[in-house]
Amino acid sequence: MAKYSSYKCLIADDYGTGRRLIKESLEKVGFSCIEAENGTQALSLLKQTIVNLVIADVQMPEMNGLELLKEIRVDDNLKDLPVILTLLEPFDDIIARGKKLRMNNYLVKPFDVFTLSKILDNVIKTTGGESL
Image (cartoon, rainbow, N blue to C red; front, side):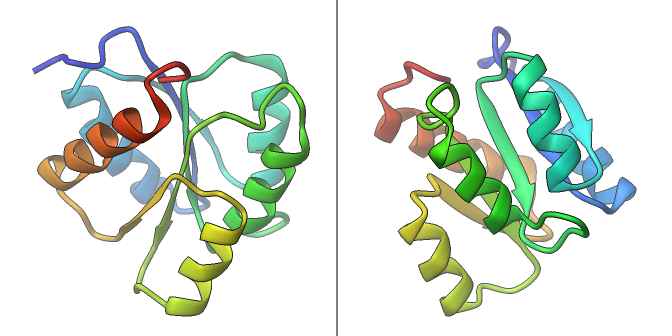
C-alpha cells in the first residue's frame, strides 16, 4: 500500500515516540519522512529541504504547531504547503485558530493508519495534489 511513494513529509513533534509512530504510519502508505523536535527546527528544515507535507504537533517547545503554521503561511516559498496539525484533544479554540491560519486538516492522537490515510486523501483532494 505505497500510494504516496513519491512524497516526503516533515514530522514536527517534541515527543520522540509520537514522531516514530507517525513516521511508521506514513511509511506504511509510502511516504519518506524527516523529523524535527520543535517548530524552530522544523522551520529551519523547511528552508533547506523540499517536502510535500508537514504534520506538526500543536504543543511543542520553542515554537508550537500553530506558530509554525503561521510562519509557513507568511513565507512566499512555503505558503501553499499542506499542514496537518496533531492534538491530544479536539479543542474547539485550537481548531478554530488552526483554520484561521489555513491548516489543511488535523488529527487527534492517537490515530491509526486508516485515519491518517483518510486525512491524507482529503488533503490531497482539497489542495488539488499540486504540493502533495
